[in-house]
Amino acid sequence: MKAQKKPLELVKESVIDVIEEGSVPLNRDEVDDETRLLGSGSSIDSLDLVNIVVVLEDKVEEEYGKSVTIANEDAMSRAKSPFVNVESLSRYVHELVNEKNE
Image 1 (tube, rainbow, N blue to C red):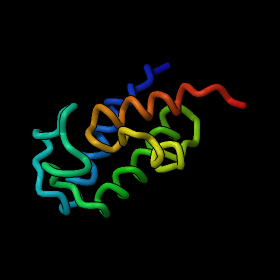
Image 2: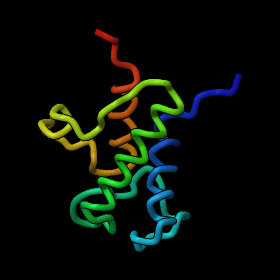
Image 3: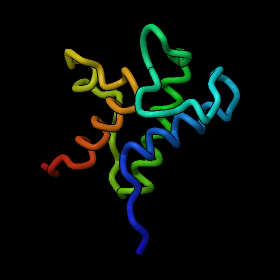
Image 4: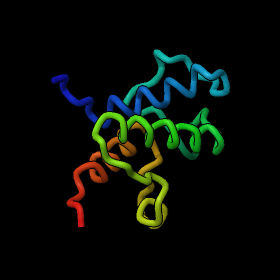
């Protein structure tokens, strides 16, 4: 049984996947915890962010066997957006993956 990847690793992989599609002017080696995904200082536009979210949702389902919606009402209504950087998005994904099923 293989060990599950951590949300941080999945977020980085998703960003790199979108970079490798050629639309983001970043090098894969530049992706770290502080890579900006939204706002000033980000090389990622809104369409690229949507692509990252879609890729990430697929990776989370594949890795954890749980379907999550990352760009949901909770994410959009937070005082501090989970889409600011790689680390904040990985923390949010961690929350979603670990939510108790209701």
